Length: 273
Length: 179
Image 1 (cartoon, each protein chain N blue to C red):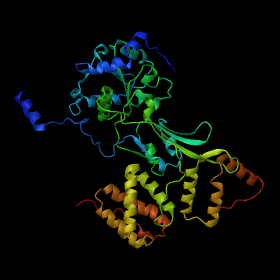
Image 2 (tube, helix red, strand yellow; image 1 turned 60 degrees about the vertical axis):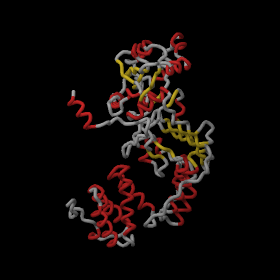
Image 3 (cartoon, rainbow over the protein chains, first blue to last red; image 1 turned 180 degrees about the vertical axis):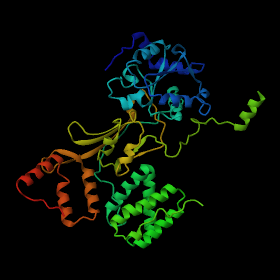
């Protein structure tokens, strides 16, 4: 859907050669005008993080200005709501030629999570021509600095289109189970993810399996209990330690026949010094 | 004024040298999802989990390939694809330098997988890798010989044909006993 026709005089004054000419002979700082087209303010917070002394974009001459008539770069965020459609056009037409338009954030580049919502136009590039896209939700201040320096041609674009076409039809190898039953590993991974979410759950899973293998005989309930208790005492983080015990009590006992005394009593473990 | 200079001397220079020096992001930073094509089985778990539909898993027009496609511009870096991926083919990397100039298609990543056709009706329904991977998983899951033989026949049947076969079996009075 094309909603706005860029006037011919603006189009003529904004072709690539003129933009490159501007970058070469500007002889002063770049002024950035930030326009919020209905974003959630996440991108704004990151822009303000990016203009703090920690990142200091004035090293490259970027300076936020309060008026589009002073600006060289338009920094647009948000998926463009109906309310912000005309203000965006007014800012675009008010910016002196040649202007560089940067779409910031997932919403600015493609509409992001709102891409098919009824009330937005999903993306700055649906309305005005965009030069640089900075994806991220919100982008890291370093990404913003990178995007703006890419716009000036200081840094090169890293991302390229990648396409894999030759399928060798070989699935990834399935690892052998320590108990001879991969359902044990499956349940263990699912339960550790449930306990500690996916990043730390995977670490917990690795820790538990390492402790289990260390016991020597995995089917011996006494040996595994001592090995897991040992691992729990060595563990610095009490969350991992407790979850190791929970995994042993709830998953291991389902796959290896256990007595009540083979379970680890979690109340008796003392943390810290 | 002198006090101000003292303070600035005390804290030193805190500005990051980026982009002239590489910047190290924090641990567990959610950057661009890195896709490992050789590990992908085309199960579409990531496509189902993706809240913004940045990952789509669809057949191409003539249904000869299953196409996994990721649009970085739409990604909100939530990490759900990483969470659900059974083989670790997609993991959030530490890459944050994602800006592209002019052409938005540079943000797209695709992978084409061979399709598995149904042994009953001949229509494609899944990726070949997924079928092989399921069989391999089942063979290591402590199942009986008979059960495994049965699995070999039904993994390459599409869901629609499976449904009709079950209905036909029930209405014909054949009982299915799964050990």
